[in-house]
Amino acid sequence: MFHKNESALTAIIQLSKLELSSDYLNKKFNDHRLYTAAILLILIPLGLAEGIFDYKSHPEIKSELFQLRLYFLLLVIPAWIILKSSCLKLATATILITLVFSAYLGIRIIEHTGEDLVTTVSNFALYPFFIFFVLIGFSIYIQIFFLTVAFSFVVLSENHGVLDELIQNVYFQISVQSSVSALFIMLVFSWSYYHRYNLLLALEKSSQTDPLTGVANRRYFDSKLKSEASRSARSSSDCALILLDIDHFKRINDTFGHPTGDRVICALADLCVNQSREIDLVARLGGEEFAVILPDTNITDAKNLAERIRKHVEDISVTGDAGEIVKWTISLGVSSLPESRSSRYTTEIVMEMFIKKADNALYEAKKKGRNQTVLSQ
Image (cartoon, rainbow, N blue to C red; front, side):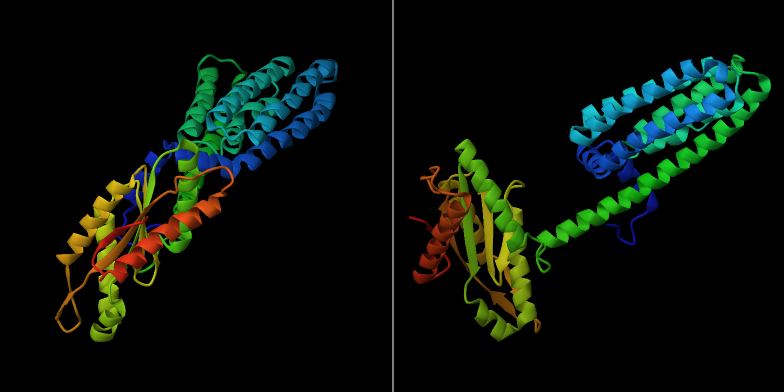
Protein backbone atom coordinates (compact mmCIF):
# COMPACT_ATOMS: atom_id res chain seq x y z
CA MET A 1 0.00 0.00 0.00
CA PHE A 2 1.44 3.35 -0.97
CA HIS A 3 2.42 6.14 1.35
CA LYS A 4 1.79 9.67 0.19
CA ASN A 5 5.49 10.43 -0.01
CA GLU A 6 6.21 7.41 -2.23
CA SER A 7 7.18 8.58 -5.69
CA ALA A 8 5.78 7.18 -8.89
CA LEU A 9 9.32 6.28 -9.92
CA THR A 10 9.74 4.12 -6.81
CA ALA A 11 6.47 2.37 -7.57
CA ILE A 12 7.51 1.74 -11.18
CA ILE A 13 10.82 0.25 -10.04
CA GLN A 14 9.05 -1.96 -7.54
CA LEU A 15 6.55 -3.08 -10.19
CA SER A 16 9.35 -3.90 -12.64
CA LYS A 17 10.96 -6.11 -9.98
CA LEU A 18 7.69 -7.77 -9.00
CA GLU A 19 7.03 -8.70 -12.64
CA LEU A 20 10.09 -10.94 -12.29
CA SER A 21 9.09 -12.32 -8.88
CA SER A 22 7.75 -15.88 -8.83
CA ASP A 23 5.44 -15.19 -5.86
CA TYR A 24 3.90 -12.15 -7.54
CA LEU A 25 3.53 -13.89 -10.90
CA ASN A 26 1.98 -16.99 -9.31
CA LYS A 27 -0.55 -14.78 -7.58
CA LYS A 28 -1.26 -12.88 -10.80
CA PHE A 29 -1.65 -16.10 -12.79
CA ASN A 30 -3.97 -17.78 -10.28
CA ASP A 31 -6.12 -14.65 -10.06
CA HIS A 32 -6.67 -14.72 -13.84
CA ARG A 33 -6.46 -18.44 -14.57
CA LEU A 34 -10.21 -18.92 -14.98
CA TYR A 35 -10.43 -15.79 -17.12
CA THR A 36 -7.62 -16.96 -19.44
CA ALA A 37 -9.21 -20.39 -19.88
CA ALA A 38 -12.56 -18.76 -20.65
CA ILE A 39 -10.98 -16.53 -23.33
CA LEU A 40 -9.44 -19.55 -25.04
CA LEU A 41 -12.78 -21.39 -25.01
CA ILE A 42 -14.64 -18.35 -26.37
CA LEU A 43 -12.23 -18.20 -29.31
CA ILE A 44 -13.43 -21.63 -30.45
CA PRO A 45 -17.00 -20.61 -31.47
CA LEU A 46 -15.68 -17.28 -32.77
CA GLY A 47 -13.20 -19.07 -35.03
CA LEU A 48 -15.82 -21.52 -36.25
CA ALA A 49 -18.29 -18.69 -36.86
CA GLU A 50 -15.87 -17.16 -39.34
CA GLY A 51 -16.58 -20.22 -41.45
CA ILE A 52 -19.91 -18.56 -42.34
CA PHE A 53 -17.99 -15.61 -43.74
CA ASP A 54 -15.67 -18.01 -45.58
CA TYR A 55 -18.67 -19.69 -47.21
CA LYS A 56 -19.97 -16.39 -48.57
CA SER A 57 -16.69 -14.76 -49.60
CA HIS A 58 -14.71 -17.80 -50.75
CA PRO A 59 -17.16 -20.54 -51.80
CA GLU A 60 -14.57 -22.13 -54.08
CA ILE A 61 -12.27 -23.03 -51.15
CA LYS A 62 -14.83 -23.33 -48.37
CA SER A 63 -13.91 -26.94 -47.58
CA GLU A 64 -10.20 -26.14 -47.14
CA LEU A 65 -10.99 -23.14 -44.94
CA PHE A 66 -13.47 -25.15 -42.89
CA GLN A 67 -10.77 -27.72 -42.13
CA LEU A 68 -8.47 -24.96 -40.93
CA ARG A 69 -11.25 -23.50 -38.79
CA LEU A 70 -11.72 -26.91 -37.15
CA TYR A 71 -8.25 -26.56 -35.68
CA PHE A 72 -9.72 -23.96 -33.32
CA LEU A 73 -11.21 -26.91 -31.43
CA LEU A 74 -7.67 -27.71 -30.27
CA LEU A 75 -7.86 -24.63 -28.03
CA VAL A 76 -9.72 -26.87 -25.60
CA ILE A 77 -6.34 -28.41 -24.70
CA PRO A 78 -4.56 -25.23 -23.49
CA ALA A 79 -7.78 -24.07 -21.80
CA TRP A 80 -7.96 -27.35 -19.86
CA ILE A 81 -4.26 -27.15 -18.89
CA ILE A 82 -4.63 -23.54 -17.70
CA LEU A 83 -7.74 -24.41 -15.72
CA LYS A 84 -6.36 -27.53 -14.06
CA SER A 85 -2.69 -26.71 -13.53
CA SER A 86 -1.40 -24.27 -10.92
CA CYS A 87 2.16 -24.53 -12.28
CA LEU A 88 3.13 -21.15 -13.73
CA LYS A 89 5.93 -22.59 -15.90
CA LEU A 90 3.63 -25.15 -17.50
CA ALA A 91 0.95 -22.52 -18.07
CA THR A 92 3.46 -20.10 -19.62
CA ALA A 93 4.80 -22.75 -21.99
CA THR A 94 1.26 -23.75 -22.92
CA ILE A 95 0.19 -20.19 -23.73
CA LEU A 96 3.34 -19.48 -25.73
CA ILE A 97 2.78 -22.60 -27.84
CA THR A 98 -0.86 -21.55 -28.29
CA LEU A 99 0.18 -18.10 -29.53
CA VAL A 100 2.61 -19.60 -32.05
CA PHE A 101 -0.04 -22.08 -33.18
CA SER A 102 -2.63 -19.30 -33.60
CA ALA A 103 -0.22 -17.19 -35.65
CA TYR A 104 0.59 -20.17 -37.87
CA LEU A 105 -3.10 -20.93 -38.34
CA GLY A 106 -3.70 -17.32 -39.36
CA ILE A 107 -0.93 -17.51 -41.94
CA ARG A 108 -2.39 -20.70 -43.43
CA ILE A 109 -5.83 -19.08 -43.69
CA ILE A 110 -4.35 -16.05 -45.51
CA GLU A 111 -2.52 -18.38 -47.89
CA HIS A 112 -5.85 -19.94 -48.86
CA THR A 113 -7.84 -16.72 -49.11
CA GLY A 114 -5.13 -14.75 -50.89
CA GLU A 115 -4.84 -11.02 -50.46
CA ASP A 116 -8.21 -10.56 -48.87
CA LEU A 117 -8.36 -7.32 -46.89
CA VAL A 118 -10.88 -8.38 -44.24
CA THR A 119 -9.21 -11.74 -43.61
CA THR A 120 -5.74 -10.20 -43.41
CA VAL A 121 -6.75 -7.49 -40.99
CA SER A 122 -8.84 -9.80 -38.81
CA ASN A 123 -6.08 -12.41 -38.55
CA PHE A 124 -3.04 -10.22 -37.94
CA ALA A 125 -3.81 -6.54 -37.50
CA LEU A 126 -5.96 -7.34 -34.44
CA TYR A 127 -3.54 -10.00 -33.15
CA PRO A 128 -2.02 -7.66 -30.47
CA PHE A 129 -5.33 -7.61 -28.59
CA PHE A 130 -5.44 -11.40 -28.72
CA ILE A 131 -1.95 -11.40 -27.14
CA PHE A 132 -3.10 -9.14 -24.32
CA PHE A 133 -6.24 -11.12 -23.52
CA VAL A 134 -4.59 -14.54 -23.34
CA LEU A 135 -1.50 -13.23 -21.53
CA ILE A 136 -3.36 -11.03 -19.06
CA GLY A 137 -2.33 -13.22 -16.13
CA PHE A 138 1.34 -13.40 -17.09
CA SER A 139 4.39 -11.18 -16.80
CA ILE A 140 4.31 -7.83 -18.57
CA TYR A 141 7.69 -8.72 -20.06
CA ILE A 142 6.22 -11.77 -21.82
CA GLN A 143 3.32 -9.65 -23.08
CA ILE A 144 5.64 -7.00 -24.51
CA PHE A 145 7.93 -9.64 -26.04
CA PHE A 146 5.11 -11.27 -28.00
CA LEU A 147 3.66 -7.91 -28.96
CA THR A 148 7.08 -6.94 -30.34
CA VAL A 149 7.35 -10.20 -32.27
CA ALA A 150 3.87 -9.72 -33.75
CA PHE A 151 4.65 -6.15 -34.82
CA SER A 152 8.00 -7.24 -36.27
CA PHE A 153 6.08 -9.54 -38.60
CA VAL A 154 4.10 -6.50 -39.81
CA VAL A 155 7.31 -4.57 -40.51
CA LEU A 156 8.88 -7.52 -42.32
CA SER A 157 5.83 -8.06 -44.48
CA GLU A 158 5.88 -4.40 -45.50
CA ASN A 159 9.59 -4.38 -46.32
CA HIS A 160 9.36 -7.55 -48.42
CA GLY A 161 6.15 -6.71 -50.23
CA VAL A 162 4.31 -9.80 -49.06
CA LEU A 163 0.88 -8.26 -49.64
CA ASP A 164 -0.64 -5.97 -52.24
CA GLU A 165 0.38 -2.35 -51.63
CA LEU A 166 -3.14 -1.15 -50.78
CA ILE A 167 -3.79 -4.04 -48.41
CA GLN A 168 -0.33 -3.64 -46.93
CA ASN A 169 -0.90 0.06 -46.18
CA VAL A 170 -4.21 -0.64 -44.44
CA TYR A 171 -2.70 -3.64 -42.67
CA PHE A 172 0.28 -1.62 -41.42
CA GLN A 173 -1.81 1.36 -40.28
CA ILE A 174 -4.28 -0.74 -38.30
CA SER A 175 -1.46 -2.88 -36.89
CA VAL A 176 0.37 0.18 -35.57
CA GLN A 177 -2.78 1.52 -33.96
CA SER A 178 -3.76 -1.82 -32.43
CA SER A 179 -0.20 -2.54 -31.20
CA VAL A 180 0.13 0.85 -29.50
CA SER A 181 -3.36 0.50 -28.00
CA ALA A 182 -2.62 -3.03 -26.77
CA LEU A 183 0.67 -1.88 -25.24
CA PHE A 184 -1.10 0.95 -23.42
CA ILE A 185 -3.75 -1.44 -22.10
CA MET A 186 -1.07 -3.89 -20.97
CA LEU A 187 0.77 -1.20 -18.99
CA VAL A 188 -2.43 0.22 -17.46
CA PHE A 189 -3.62 -3.23 -16.42
CA SER A 190 -0.25 -4.13 -14.88
CA TRP A 191 -0.23 -0.85 -12.97
CA SER A 192 -3.80 -1.43 -11.78
CA TYR A 193 -3.09 -5.01 -10.69
CA TYR A 194 0.04 -3.83 -8.87
CA HIS A 195 -2.07 -1.44 -6.77
CA ARG A 196 -4.59 -4.19 -6.12
CA TYR A 197 -1.80 -6.56 -5.09
CA ASN A 198 -0.40 -4.05 -2.60
CA LEU A 199 -3.85 -3.36 -1.20
CA LEU A 200 -4.44 -7.08 -0.64
CA LEU A 201 -1.05 -7.38 1.07
CA ALA A 202 -1.89 -4.46 3.34
CA LEU A 203 -5.27 -5.96 4.22
CA GLU A 204 -3.70 -9.35 4.88
CA LYS A 205 -1.01 -7.78 7.05
CA SER A 206 -3.55 -5.75 9.04
CA SER A 207 -5.54 -8.92 9.74
CA GLN A 208 -2.40 -10.59 11.12
CA THR A 209 -0.80 -7.69 12.95
CA ASP A 210 -1.30 -6.19 16.38
CA PRO A 211 -2.13 -2.51 15.76
CA LEU A 212 -0.21 -1.19 18.79
CA THR A 213 3.10 -3.01 18.47
CA GLY A 214 3.24 -4.10 14.84
CA VAL A 215 4.05 -7.72 15.75
CA ALA A 216 1.77 -10.68 14.98
CA ASN A 217 -1.61 -10.88 16.69
CA ARG A 218 -3.19 -13.85 18.44
CA ARG A 219 -4.98 -15.01 15.29
CA TYR A 220 -1.78 -15.27 13.27
CA PHE A 221 0.07 -16.77 16.24
CA ASP A 222 -2.42 -19.65 16.41
CA SER A 223 -2.13 -20.24 12.67
CA LYS A 224 1.67 -20.15 12.72
CA LEU A 225 1.95 -22.38 15.77
CA LYS A 226 -0.35 -24.94 14.15
CA SER A 227 1.70 -25.03 10.95
CA GLU A 228 4.98 -25.25 12.88
CA ALA A 229 3.64 -28.03 15.09
CA SER A 230 2.54 -29.93 12.00
CA ARG A 231 5.84 -29.34 10.16
CA SER A 232 7.90 -30.30 13.20
CA ALA A 233 5.89 -33.50 13.65
CA ARG A 234 6.46 -34.50 10.02
CA SER A 235 10.19 -33.78 10.03
CA SER A 236 10.85 -34.72 13.69
CA SER A 237 12.57 -31.36 14.16
CA ASP A 238 12.75 -29.24 17.30
CA CYS A 239 10.47 -26.33 18.03
CA ALA A 240 10.35 -24.14 21.13
CA LEU A 241 7.95 -21.60 22.55
CA ILE A 242 8.53 -18.67 24.90
CA LEU A 243 5.66 -17.02 26.76
CA LEU A 244 6.52 -13.77 28.52
CA ASP A 245 4.59 -11.33 30.64
CA ILE A 246 5.35 -7.88 32.03
CA ASP A 247 5.57 -7.99 35.83
CA HIS A 248 3.10 -5.85 37.78
CA PHE A 249 1.81 -4.26 34.60
CA LYS A 250 -1.42 -3.08 36.25
CA ARG A 251 0.68 -1.17 38.74
CA ILE A 252 2.52 0.55 35.87
CA ASN A 253 -0.77 1.61 34.30
CA ASP A 254 -2.23 2.80 37.60
CA THR A 255 0.91 4.72 38.58
CA PHE A 256 2.08 6.23 35.29
CA GLY A 257 -1.00 6.04 33.08
CA HIS A 258 -2.04 3.92 30.12
CA PRO A 259 0.04 5.82 27.52
CA THR A 260 3.16 4.92 29.49
CA GLY A 261 1.95 1.34 29.75
CA ASP A 262 1.57 1.28 25.98
CA ARG A 263 5.16 2.50 25.59
CA VAL A 264 6.35 -0.32 27.84
CA ILE A 265 4.46 -2.85 25.72
CA CYS A 266 5.95 -1.43 22.51
CA ALA A 267 9.44 -1.46 24.02
CA LEU A 268 9.08 -5.14 24.86
CA ALA A 269 7.78 -5.95 21.37
CA ASP A 270 10.72 -4.15 19.73
CA LEU A 271 13.20 -5.92 22.02
CA CYS A 272 11.79 -9.36 21.22
CA VAL A 273 11.93 -8.69 17.48
CA ASN A 274 15.50 -7.37 17.64
CA GLN A 275 16.73 -10.33 19.67
CA SER A 276 14.95 -12.97 17.59
CA ARG A 277 15.86 -14.45 14.22
CA GLU A 278 13.99 -13.74 11.00
CA ILE A 279 12.42 -17.21 11.04
CA ASP A 280 11.08 -16.68 14.58
CA LEU A 281 7.64 -15.22 15.18
CA VAL A 282 6.96 -12.63 17.86
CA ALA A 283 3.30 -12.20 18.74
CA ARG A 284 1.25 -10.22 21.21
CA LEU A 285 -1.35 -12.54 22.68
CA GLY A 286 -3.24 -9.83 24.48
CA GLY A 287 -2.63 -7.16 27.10
CA GLU A 288 0.95 -7.41 28.32
CA GLU A 289 1.48 -11.05 27.30
CA PHE A 290 3.76 -11.99 24.39
CA ALA A 291 4.96 -15.17 22.73
CA VAL A 292 7.93 -16.15 20.56
CA ILE A 293 7.75 -19.22 18.32
CA LEU A 294 11.22 -20.66 17.62
CA PRO A 295 11.33 -23.19 14.75
CA ASP A 296 14.23 -25.66 14.67
CA THR A 297 15.27 -24.66 18.19
CA ASN A 298 15.79 -26.86 21.24
CA ILE A 299 14.75 -25.84 24.71
CA THR A 300 18.29 -24.92 25.80
CA ASP A 301 18.75 -22.41 22.99
CA ALA A 302 15.26 -21.09 23.64
CA LYS A 303 16.16 -20.52 27.29
CA ASN A 304 19.30 -18.62 26.25
CA LEU A 305 17.19 -16.30 24.10
CA ALA A 306 14.67 -15.84 26.90
CA GLU A 307 17.44 -14.87 29.29
CA ARG A 308 18.90 -12.39 26.80
CA ILE A 309 15.51 -10.72 26.47
CA ARG A 310 15.02 -10.64 30.24
CA LYS A 311 18.44 -9.11 30.91
CA HIS A 312 17.99 -6.48 28.19
CA VAL A 313 14.66 -5.47 29.78
CA GLU A 314 16.52 -4.71 33.01
CA ASP A 315 18.60 -2.17 31.09
CA ILE A 316 15.65 -0.49 29.36
CA SER A 317 14.00 2.49 30.99
CA VAL A 318 10.76 3.96 29.68
CA THR A 319 9.95 7.61 30.27
CA GLY A 320 6.52 8.45 31.67
CA ASP A 321 4.35 11.38 30.61
CA ALA A 322 5.75 13.52 33.43
CA GLY A 323 9.35 12.62 32.56
CA GLU A 324 9.74 10.03 35.30
CA ILE A 325 11.78 6.90 34.68
CA VAL A 326 9.84 3.63 34.70
CA LYS A 327 11.85 0.52 35.56
CA TRP A 328 10.16 -2.78 34.73
CA THR A 329 10.83 -6.50 34.51
CA ILE A 330 9.37 -9.55 32.79
CA SER A 331 8.82 -13.22 33.58
CA LEU A 332 9.23 -15.96 31.01
CA GLY A 333 8.18 -19.56 30.53
CA VAL A 334 9.87 -21.82 27.97
CA SER A 335 8.63 -25.10 26.52
CA SER A 336 9.55 -27.42 23.69
CA LEU A 337 7.24 -29.35 21.42
CA PRO A 338 6.00 -32.45 23.28
CA GLU A 339 8.20 -35.47 22.62
CA SER A 340 5.25 -37.87 22.58
CA ARG A 341 4.02 -36.83 19.13
CA SER A 342 2.35 -40.09 18.25
CA SER A 343 -0.37 -40.40 15.65
CA ARG A 344 -3.06 -40.51 18.31
CA TYR A 345 -2.52 -36.81 19.01
CA THR A 346 -4.09 -34.32 16.62
CA THR A 347 -2.28 -31.10 15.77
CA GLU A 348 -4.74 -29.17 17.93
CA ILE A 349 -3.96 -31.37 20.95
CA VAL A 350 -0.22 -30.98 20.40
CA MET A 351 -0.66 -27.19 20.20
CA GLU A 352 -2.65 -27.17 23.41
CA MET A 353 0.02 -29.21 25.20
CA PHE A 354 2.74 -26.96 23.79
CA ILE A 355 1.10 -23.75 25.03
CA LYS A 356 0.04 -25.27 28.36
CA LYS A 357 3.60 -26.31 29.19
CA ALA A 358 4.93 -22.81 28.49
CA ASP A 359 2.05 -21.23 30.38
CA ASN A 360 2.70 -23.43 33.42
CA ALA A 361 6.38 -22.48 33.31
CA LEU A 362 5.41 -18.78 33.14
CA TYR A 363 3.10 -19.21 36.10
CA GLU A 364 5.95 -20.86 38.00
CA ALA A 365 8.22 -17.91 37.21
CA LYS A 366 5.60 -15.53 38.62
CA LYS A 367 5.15 -17.72 41.66
CA LYS A 368 8.89 -17.78 42.39
CA GLY A 369 9.13 -14.00 42.53
CA ARG A 370 9.06 -12.80 38.89
CA ASN A 371 11.93 -11.41 36.76
CA GLN A 372 13.16 -14.88 35.84
CA THR A 373 12.97 -17.62 33.24
CA VAL A 374 11.57 -21.08 33.99
CA LEU A 375 11.72 -24.15 31.77
CA SER A 376 8.71 -26.45 31.49
CA GLN A 377 8.97 -29.86 33.12
